[in-house]
Length: 358
Image (cartoon, rainbow, N blue to C red; front, side, top):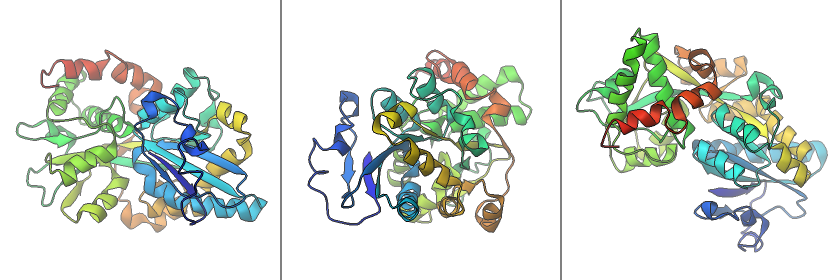
């Protein structure tokens, strides 16, 4: 979905309701035509527009963050800025940018998707993760298991998802960072729990066999679980749980397994696009502001774990301590994890191929 978000609240602009207008013209390729477009008017006299291609479950955060940055930028520079949003499964978004989606910045939930733009598209430099603090990840979350109220199936750990009689949902790891984190969380937790290395693939195979359908992104999986009532559990990010309860009611409990994965949310300027658009300065400032006190507070209010220790402590009741591992620690980084688990014919594909139901 492409959302044209700005600091104003004017009626729908005739330009943005026109399919030939700049907001929609970014979707020239057939593979992108299915994306819906929500347009809000550009402020009068807008001189600069940024497009942020982001992952599926970040809509609400950027809906609040973007106006805050627009106000900050206007007050600091006097320039009127408009920010458009595109959302989808993280890996699907990366492929869209690779295929021609003219994003000035990308804000993803895994470094692997930004590496793709550097390695295959040459759209930004390979050292992108060193351009901002915290390896260019201003916020984090953790993978958790959402269960029906009262936890009737007594799901306590990742291994429980592989028990007979359990069905659960997770997004497709081939298209969704949310799904990849869930898969790697189960694999890494098995290691942390002392499961022999040669026994882990079979354990993960049993878990995958209990997924009746792999939706393309986190929001689609949430809809299947919460609205369509499919499955006993949902693997998702901690940040999604309050949103699910707000939309679908307090019908769920959240399970924090003994070990889980730290989901780091990296950001980067798409150098080639920003250079074409002349938006390098604005794009850099837009991402840098994510580390500001205001940006970190907005993140915490949207249930993302801020990097700022004082702000994290202020919201400590919402973010319980949990034992975590990182992709770097457990899998040698995202490039290695991609190669070993998610490339075509890698471990994930082989595990699915071994189960005729998938």
